[in-house]
Image (cartoon, rainbow, N blue to C red; front, side):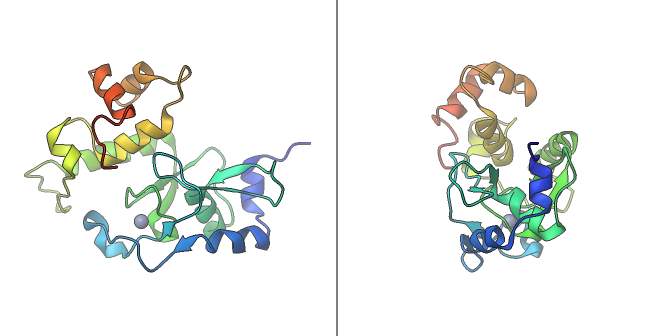
Length: 190
Ligand SMILES: [Zn+2]
């Protein structure tokens, strides 16, 4: 019988845990302005995808299932994650695997979190959250934040989950903006 990913994550062998922490830099990650109270990010320096999310095999064989590095970190810290949940970043840094910067949430909470962050980062926001405009956020598209751009690129699967679907999911009116984000013509710095 196949063992599902959540069961594997709740019972990670110490060899996998050891291998995981060998690929984490706890010293040189950024302290991000919008969550500086959480301290420095712990950067994953193993395999990463274009969006910056790390991943690692959950076993020693080459056919072992892979999981994203931040999900593995959260699972190590909590002895597994609730079935069906996503692991979200408080810091919005996809390469960060510091357990205190992560929390397990639903897709619905993920979207709510992104919307709240987008709202908090508008100029003149009275939320008390530090305004942390990146180069892309004020220039190209008021609908997007770094977190949303990274999430769009992570979601993109050519021919399966394309620009139209991404535009709909993230409520971006212009499909062409999504296409340019995916092709890295805009938001090139992340
Ligand atoms: Zn972080």
